[in-house]
Length: 261
Image (tube, rainbow, N blue to C red; front, side, top):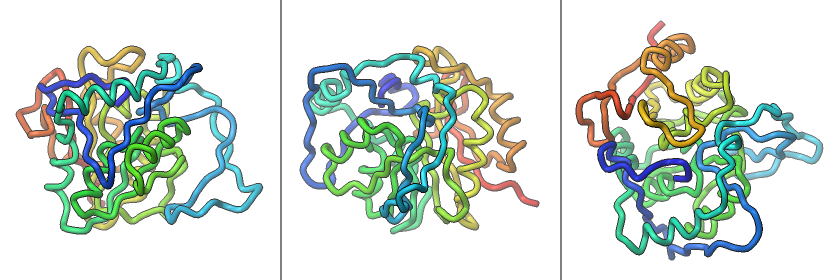
């Protein structure tokens, strides 16, 4: 994931799981700024429904002009080269997907929120789940489609989700997505994920607590869990890695569900 370190200690290994043929696009000339974790873009965005259909002309959703932390980072487009190197080196980056899979019945409905180039969604699709990936960055969506032909990924912003888009058995929001949001939008993003959960649905979240990537925020545990409570989410489990090692001060992994009324 762009902006995400390959961190074996967190168990967030970065690997590619093919759906059909894995095709790694090579970097092209010109300036590109693909984002894995930015969840807001300036201007407007034509929305597509969760069934993949485009909304009628004129039905554009106005987006905030507040820049995400990822946009502020000004990351440049070495993503294709980096991804090719990860494949060639045999890196295992399936850690998040393996944990997500253990939380699900077979053939579950999963939303990958802030999917980037689609590595987690691809791994879950390969495991037989009904997966929808959303990512607002056009370049990353294009790369996901080139790398994983057939991957159901939409150019769409997490903050535009509503209850009509659910229900999902699991929402996956990993790889520092939360700490790259625009300032002040964390509760809104958490609420959007809550709103698409099914009756027994859960959310899997993970991010660096210390030494976050460049321009990402530091999100203290106490503040994050206060935000969860404020939007009606409860902590079912907190761990320090995607292999569920004990909670620590370096990396946080949470399994969340709706708070009981």
